[in-house]
Length: 156
Image 1 (tube, rainbow, N blue to C red):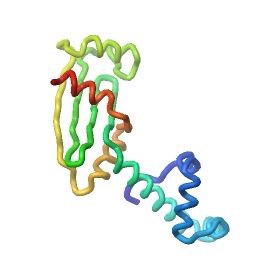
Image 2 (cartoon, one colour; image 1 turned 90 degrees about the vertical axis):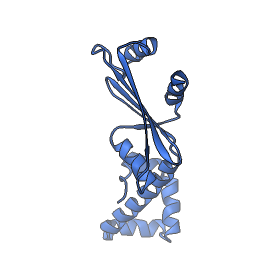
Image 3 (cartoon, helix red, strand yellow; image 1 turned 180 degrees about the vertical axis):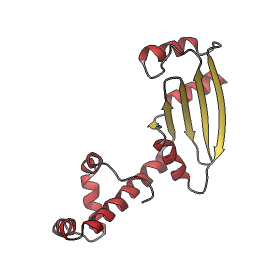
């Protein structure tokens, strides 16, 4: 498996797409039920293939990721050629960026000596989507990029 198997909840959400996927494999509903009972290993493989297809589709469209922890923000813009990063480190141990109060403090004090910034960019490896998936595995979430674009404006 290239990525990660979709959770039971995700598979339930994608039930119509999974039915279409099985249809493209010429597997009917009755055959699927029989496959799950008689050849569970093959059924598991089908779920893995479907999961990878869904991940490929999602990852190919991802443009922005965010990984926010107590004192750090890693904001990624995933362009066609490279991954761009805005990294923020808060030096005030009283602040937790994951809370509304902490983020409010940051917005008021983003130019203070208690905040450090780093920008970087990196070319993708052999597999762009796998690079994106690694960031998600490390805790990044897919976003629309509002925070990244805000940083882009204040850094100009």
